[in-house]
Image 1 (cartoon, rainbow, N blue to C red):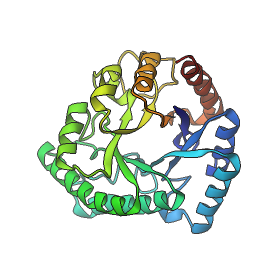
Image 2: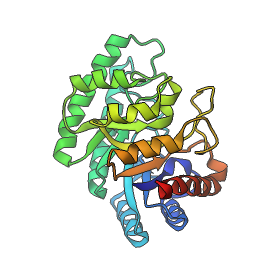
Image 3: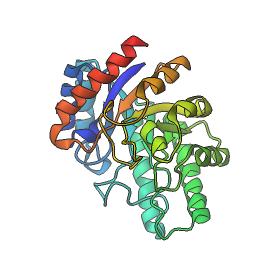
Image 4: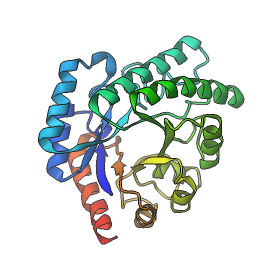
Length: 276
C-alpha cells in the first residue's frame, strides 16, 4: 500500500511547496485540493497545471486522489452543495465538479472525491437523495469519457452518512465511474466499525482517507495514533484484501503545525505498514 497526505492540511503553503515537503518526508503521494489556495479550477491556469505536473515528476511523487469536496473558493467547506434548495446553487456545484473532472484528467489522476450530497438542515431526505442521484448520473457520463472515477465520501450530518446509505445510493447509480472514498474516521463517527466495513465495502472502495477520532466519536480529525480508532486493525484488514493503492491521511485542522503533523503521521502509519 502507498501512503499519501492531503494538501488540504497545507493551506498556508503553495501546492508546489506542499509537494516538496511531502516528498522530503517520504510520502508516496499527495491528494491535491481542488479549492483555494491549491488548485481551485477558476484560478488554475494551464501554466500552473504544467508546473504542478513537472514538480510531481521531479519529486517522483504520485497523485493519490483529487479532492473536489471542499469549496471555500465559493462559500465554505460544503457549500454550494448538491442538495441546495436553490437550483442555481446546485448547478454551481455540479459545474464545479465538471471542471474538477477535467483537471483530474489533465493531470492523469484516476480518482476525484466529492461530498455525499450536502448539509441536511431544512432539507427533505427523499428529495435530497433524488437531486443528488440526478447530479451524479450527469457527472458519471462526463467522468466515464474522461477516464476518471468519482468517489462519493460519506460524512456525518450530510445526505449519505452510513455504509448502508452508500450502498443504497450506489444501487441507484450503478455506473463504474462512481465509487466510494472510504473515510475511516467518518464511519467511526457514525458508530460503525471501520474494520468490519472493509470487506463489506470492498466492491465499491477505490481509495481510503485516514485520520483518528476521539472516543466521543465527535467529527474532529486527529493525528493517527492519538484517538480511539483501531488503526493497526484497519490497516491490516485493508492489506488482507490485497488493496495496493493509496491511503491518504487527511488532517486539515492542523494548519499551523502542518509539517510536524505530516511527519508524525507518516512515522506512525508507515511504522504500522512496515510491520504488516
